[in-house]
Length: 309
Image (cartoon, rainbow, N blue to C red; front, top):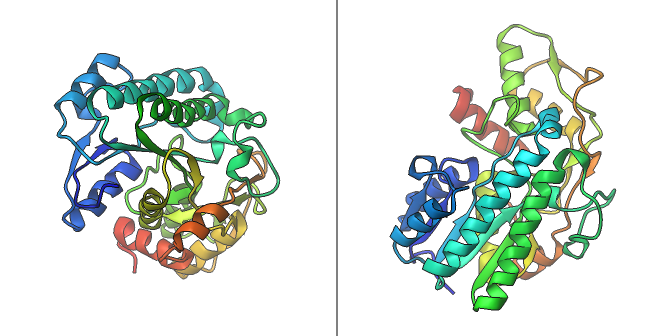
């Protein structure tokens, strides 16, 4: 197994996770080589082949590239998200086989790749039912990546790992309405409404909606822990601590020291009522636990992105 001092190839250094992973490696003096948007269109096969051929030989490839949109706009882009992401993933798999077969491919997914369930979802539920309508195209492309890594590893004698992640948040996340995950969007809206002198904090959806939530550095450390313990499988990588959206909203208000009333306007986008994955296998094998609780994570985002605190 490769060590942190082996060079890593980070595919997707412009994205939220890739940007933070590159920063995490740099802070520790670990060598890495990055591929980002400026290097070319990763949905184009010859481009990906060229970039992988030109990269130094590495111990790990972190494949973090995905085209994603959030909220109601997802319903209108299912074909686009399926086509573009599937091409990206297949291109990366083939370039891995051809040019970096010594490297372990670590790819990432989310609960979007699982069927809907009203209880935390274990790995055994993968491909056992339909996906939520809002993520059918995106989730299917993630299934292609997970299965593709497995079958490539089996046929060509490679090593892979597909990590299913929590909903992430942290510094410098996307804040655009069609790209922000719920946490970045909530924090940004709270800051704007407080600064405008508002007495209400507007939260989309339902306060009883349940999600997994994790600060980005904790998720990076979970991925690295999974890498040390698992190979050639999919593995859920969360702390098994799902949270209610209502509790998150109250934590944001508290972190801001804002005496606002939290309101939930009717008619706003609501995804699946419960999206939580069961990481019992990962936790038992690694002993990993998050370093940042919700209050600490929110405080770090407020300080880095808004100069608060």
